[in-house]
Image 1 (tube, rainbow, N blue to C red):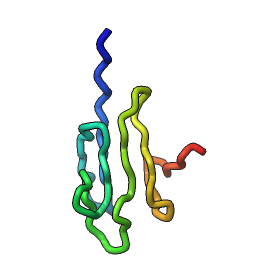
Image 2: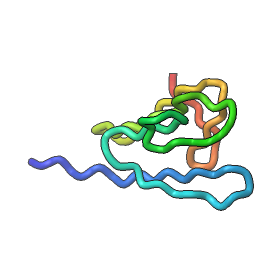
Image 3: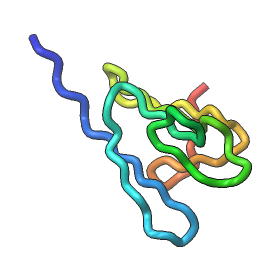
Image 4: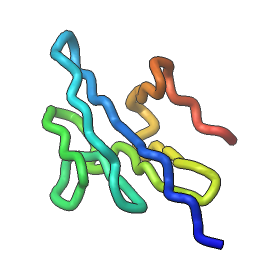
Length: 83
């Protein structure tokens, strides 16, 4: 039996009052940060090299936050990783 295709993942980046920018997440991992090699490179002072990673898993997408001091919003609310 063939595996079902992974559901689409869409990332919406909002900064201040600017219009949101949307990115389609493709591949098994999508890295957000400031350095070369990130799928989405952010510009700004005092941002870490890598902010988070979105990974496709068999049971659905997973978000791994790698910059604990910065707030990260998910679906309109503050992201809180499961312990």
